Image 1 (tube, rainbow, N blue to C red):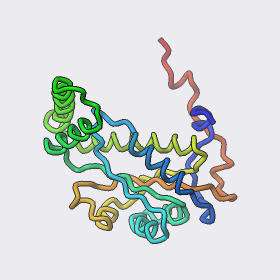
Image 2: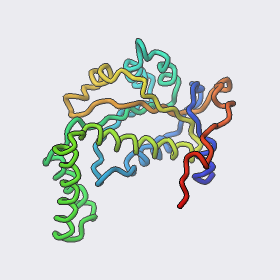
Image 3: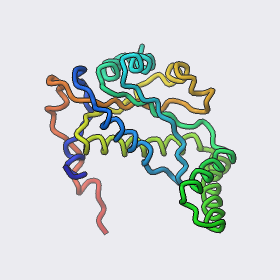
Length: 217
């Protein structure tokens, strides 16, 4: 399956078959996609809580109660659920950590390149921290880039998935102590295989026509 075929076939699974489980190899592939996702200036302002056990899925399901209870089966019946978390702040200490990781990984061949990379990243981060004052929204945008990467990657691997913004972020943060660690929950993605009676699987994929969304120059 090529990437276009994956995009054509994927959809938001509304009902998972709880009897069908992902293999450890598949879970490993999804984790690799999470790690390799692009982010602005390689900021990687994220953390992921990954659950594949009944106990772990039950903990994530605590964040889809009350007004969001309609999403509970999508967590509990899935083979794997991932809580996407965004950083709540980004400071010089974190930027130095990113730089150190890049240097250790061989991405910075010399001090001149290191200084250029650091100056560029710091500039863009500080634009959002101090000028636009939207750094939290900016970091969430990077998390959504990751979500898109994972959704398309999962489809290419033949894995069904559903993204869920319908979560109680406060409850999720409290369950996993996220705010004390400098993160907050943004969304949950669940993975597995569609149930036979998943009605969404039978619905055609409908998108706007090309002449409505494209301007060709």
